[in-house]
Length: 591
DNA sequence: GTGAAGGGCCAC
DNA sequence: AAACGTGGCCCTTCAC
Image (tube, rainbow, N blue to C red; front, side):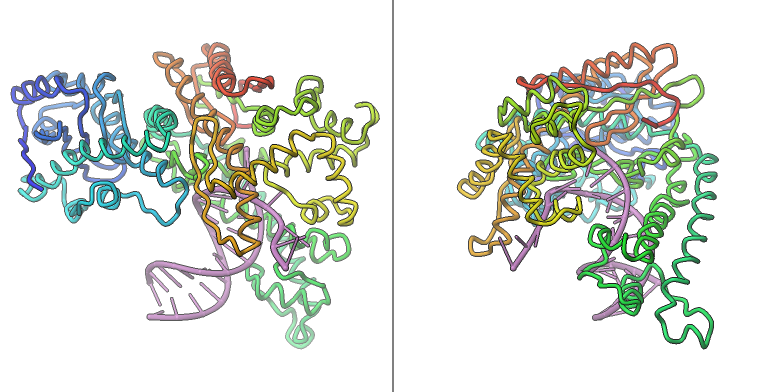
């Protein structure tokens, strides 16, 4: 593919070029950078293309003259990028948005991301890859050479090949966008595409903001856990080696406590009837009868805390900011949930000993808000089950309220066991729980579990009907959708009962989990707009929770703004069930 | 040495 | 007969 491009390295040419480009309402947009992390490297090129003509702006000569963030020579470029009326089409737009925000001080307006669009269209097909080369090949049938992607973008003089590559990537965005929009509309994914694209900038900013992690507090906590782990390891070692023959001859036979194989063998030697797997939920029922099993589970939990959430996380603290800047993937799961890595701030243990190390900095406060039972409210709304809806309206204690209905007693007379059953079912029902798993969790017999589940679904008949229909529909139509039209395509072998059962469970879960993700993303956008111009900054999101850091004196206002954004977002979708958001102001990330 | 797979466990 | 959905990270094991 021939690309017509112009390299720009002076202010006057830049002004002319930006003037010309501003006559177009859709531009391909790309950047080339010397590193992958804006804190570590420089932005070398910004490419903008109307498809026919591509401007490759070399920022090196500008950077040599002063600060790119304030330089007046770059004002035309900043205006163009900021203008929300001019759509900027980029692949993995969050990346470019972050770099431009960090180095040029610009919040890019009107982003459209071909990566997210490609993910939406793939509808959960795990075999599809979404890098630009694959996406271009899939939608345009063109092969894109990406060899220059990792070339040296800090060179004094860029090669013709490098610049041409840079231009081509931006130019490709225009035909790609055409094809992709065609598909989005055809698949009725336009609403969810807009939702996703509107979240790119808020998430880019959140990654830039980072979350302050107090090194000292974290280490302090680790020391405590290390002592506990050492003690547990010692005790467990003793208990396990009791079943090993060599123990008496050579002292204690040390086994690797982190090796499933060795631990399994040792348990067998002790006569523990271990299940196929030694996973926690399978071992749990044995914990009462076998103290060694209880000890193992305790050890594993502590060990997990030390390894996954040990010193490693401190490596992620950026020296420039003292904060952790994790990577969020906007469509981390087919359901639309975010995923997070380096580090995964969505799986920090709930125990406050870990979370209290995440704090607001001097003079700031954290505002922490989460949806109360959002997935169950969505399920209640979808199913229209009056009884289920009523338990949200009436009960302060939702699980007690459902227990009262299911067991036909007054709320005051609900027993601890009844409430536990109701709670487990309330959580499990969203995942398509079965009687055996329910029995395992609660410790009742299988027939008893079946009996309780029958009572539950007899109480909530419409809920039962909705779940059944969701499963049937998925088998019939092979697709499922969320409230905003996010789609999942089912792939299963019709002759494989296990696959059919799996698809059915997926079909129950996808619309609920996915709609919850839709709502959170909508809230993120509303919040982003509402806090612009204030001290409030998004620092973390965990599926149904949003954490914002702001000046102390703006905390009350921010809490209200956050709560309002979250409630409004949910109320756009959930009409029959009240929405509850718990918001609090704190110094530490604790509930 | 390195990378993938399997098993396990953390979050929601 | 199978048995609860979505992720990421850590460890061990095993193949190259």
